[in-house]
Length: 229
Image (cartoon, rainbow, N blue to C red; front, side):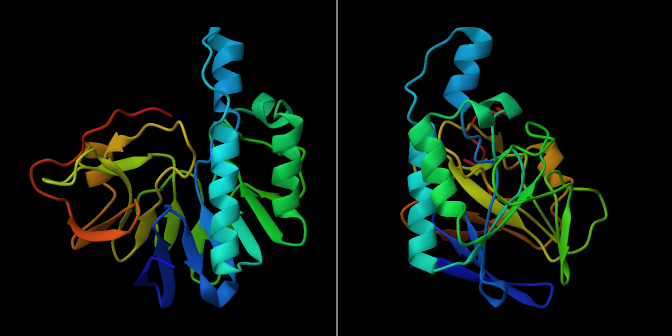
């Protein structure tokens, strides 16, 4: 399993190539911004048709991470669905696939700005969640300690590395996870909103076939990508 171990607030978290985090001490896989049902939501609201495969691709990625890690718990850091109607509008086979992943696991849904209420699926819904020294919420709060969040979909490009890649950003006090779902855009990691949240020294872990740890902020070439929430 490709992973980078990160000491954080007295715990060890493993950053996976997919953008997920593994907290071995709690047997917990942490993901953010799955945005399940995005193509259905776009078709419903805009009349624009996209290939309806992003939910399947995201669930297959999640299933692979669960198989590789053996995690018995999952924590979704908000915007798990593109909106609450998307949660009820999943294709029957996608809903069945998701329920099969939830069954037998401790599953936590943290609310996001796209899905502010329970989605009518198994698992426990939280506005935010505290476990030991760590606080899990969707949107980072200034001054927080031991915080893990999502929302911003950070992406980072480096010279010679091709397209910008989704990335985890972190410093000694907080982590901001990348979007885990397919069809999700991103915010350049060098954007002022993210620079204001990540202190020095800061680091980024780029996703891909193999996770890549780099200092943050990076030099020229960073941040190609568009912000889409």
